[in-house]
Length: 372
Ligand SMILES: Cc1ncc(COP(=O)(O)O)c(C=O)c1O
Image: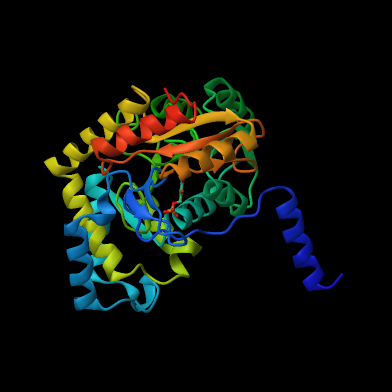
């Protein structure tokens, strides 16, 4: 078969499985947006910009000033000539904000997981990974070239017995907030089990906004991976933890070493975001977000609210019905989630107004969906 035929066959199979996808442009990413193709006004309930910081005037100003000062690109990897004072400053701020000894930046949250897990996992007796971990964790496990063992979702007994079987020096890796279900990992219990088995824990905080139950002193050595693309409203990833471990990543992690340093604009904007997160404005934004979540599903622990509909066609039909009413909530289907668990993945933000929340709730009622 020729390459052209192979490529055509891949796309035919994708379309026949109902899995063909293409990006659709929004004129801007704020909750109030338009579909570029139709100019239809939409309220976006699908973004990970949980505090609305991507549109904050202080971040915009910081990005523009950094471009004026340093230009648009860094021109090289950090260890060659790409490092700027803003990169080092952001790493210090991240370490302070996350109460860690040290931090290192990566281009994205995706590459931060690749870098941390592949580099550390290479020295592990085995890598144990929660069955619902994000794709970037799964790919990090693959790149570590070691034995990966999947444990049942948040199942402490299953993890305990699997760790007992592999012996000491294992690596355990988990999302702290799971990206398709919005539930949270039992972080302190996981750390206690890791301590008992002399395992290292890597936590992916990509979707963490509220720290309740997820932070504080842990019993075992821990690295925390984060992203600047969601709560922080920019782009980039980081790993923070003990300085010696971070030094290992700086010296050995290929996704850190062999790629160009982040843009001055995004780096400076992230510093401005951390300024806000460390001040009372950050707390106020989190309170607004908390209240918006509670209007949809009282007490739910994160801004990711899955509405499980089961059937793929129903999920697509409900998502289209909402879109006709100007509400953007994507349908998530296999292979992203398990067969029979197709869903709407609804995310709320501090930037949604009371009027947006009212429109969402009446639209859900109109399509006969109970989100509580
Ligand atoms: C749990 C999790 N980890 C990591 C990432 C990757 O982060 P980024 O988008 O910054 O590459 C994502 C992205 O959606 C995620 O959901």
